[in-house]
Length: 82
Image 1 (cartoon, rainbow, N blue to C red):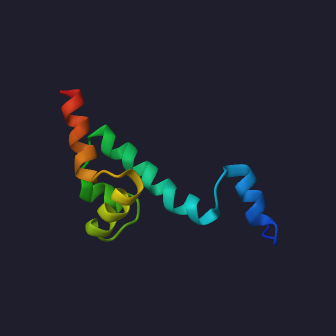
Image 2: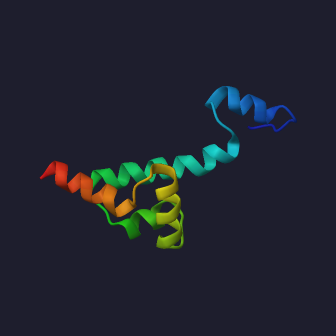
């Protein structure tokens, strides 16, 4: 069981090397990148799988994180695998 104390954020940073907020926002984006690079799914499916309700919001967040559009990430996989 996780017990929260006033030192928990510092302990989290020690364990994971990032803040709780950054971890919560970055982890789904990393999963999304993996799904897109596999090339077995659409951008809309990835959007729903990682918990976004809006493809536009997901695409914007993905671009901010990786400096590439999700569709370009998906197309890059198809180009390199064919």
